[in-house]
Image (cartoon, rainbow, N blue to C red; front, side, top):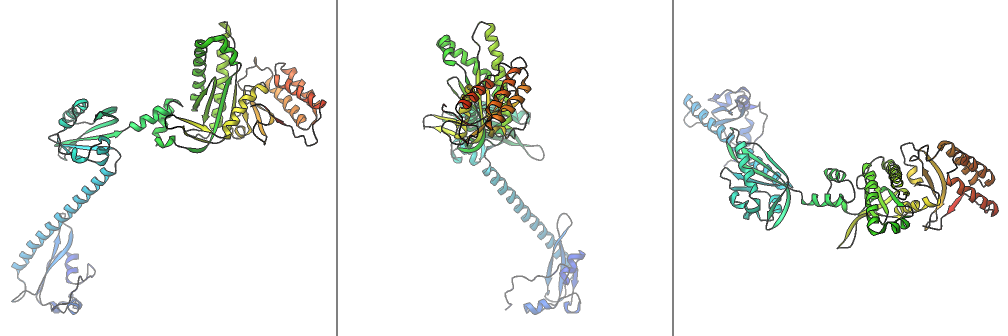
Length: 519
């Protein structure tokens, strides 16, 4: 009895088999041990005694040698020429069988790959045969349609896409005739009275010879995207909302997140008096006109409108899509808002109406953004100390007779060059640490602020004296600033403040910090 040996391995050039494999020629050996190419070690391993050998190459349809077939120990003597012919014929059949087996394996692998790919797709894929019968439907398709695959497969397309979905059959017929893809963007399909917003692509399925095999329907569910886009369009320019979603956006973007943003607050001065004069309908028309202009300025710099608070506007830059220059975008938006308000105010005066002035506060900080509210009412907004400081700076515009104030947090991150003056170190209400406050003057013209840079130069020198408690010297510099522009109310405010400090000297630890007692 022969020992059990699973396989014997040797190089493809060794022994009789190796010779046939490398040369591609049949070998017929009547006495194996007389041939030096025969490796006797295999007989020793197996206990078999090899007498005669017939070996022929195994060649595939491309002419490549893929193996050999070997017959041993013909009964009654050596192998004949007829035996060679028979073995070659047998080997040819073996080659065909191996090719078919490999082809089947390759087809099976491709089938498994295609099925796995279809199942992993987020888009629904439905295929029809040449008789318009539904033959496949992946998991995403069943999820979108909300039916089990078993309830979809085997149905006629005409029967399945009936009623409100009958237009799909028209698309299928068109594709079959034109043999070209047909795309329908943002359309509705209805299953069980439940409309679903989709992008539908209908494609012809053809063989390599051009024979029509059927039709493929690819269904992309855009219902969630449409809801998110509609929500986000409330807070920003619709084009920005669309681009956000194109950049891998989804409903998760409306969840909570901590991020750096520049918050803008704006407010109309003396609005209470204006609204009393305008009445209810006039006030609404006034605000609608004002908000339309201001929101346009914010959207132009790709800012996000957060909310309207009475006559105030709250916006953020850096949400939900951040830019490298969000602080500059916020400042440019603020400048544009003041200029637009000034133009509008002049038009109002010419029509015999009251002028309009506004103040804007800007601050950059880490804020929390997300959908905040109750189960019945949610609003996308930002919260945090950074938001509160922006609001305080907007209120401080009244104290400093300014129209745009920004914190040192925003000023320190600006990339552009602006006409700015550092007007104070302030502790706002509810805080203990001072923050540097800057006034942006770029919205001014020579008419609205003559000799601006001369005023800024004198003002800066005055502030250095003020912070060093040299109040008389500071007053002298503030007066020079007023000589350049008598309408610079901030210089007048500081002259009054310096006179108060001369009359009531501060303590020795004076550091120039001003504490605000009002919001």
